[in-house]
Length: 87
Image (cartoon, rainbow, N blue to C red):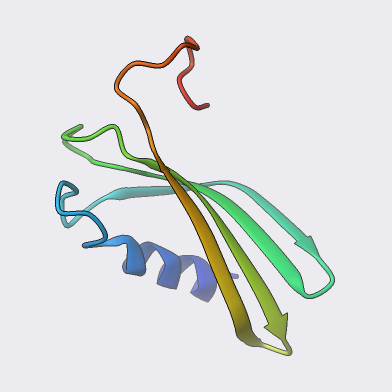
């Protein structure tokens, strides 16, 4: 799990031209069932240059190898209808 989270954080660097090279990547939730792992994350700018992203990463494993990967990424709006924004 440690190696998986490290590689996810490294992949995020450079994913958006508005993000700095040192984004803040946080894991909010991890759900694992049989061969599937779902990780809910946030990715934000240290300088608050952007509001950042909320992401869901889905992995399917065979043994210790990732054999399928999907992700869903949503930009955080500057103004949201809800007081706590997206969290």
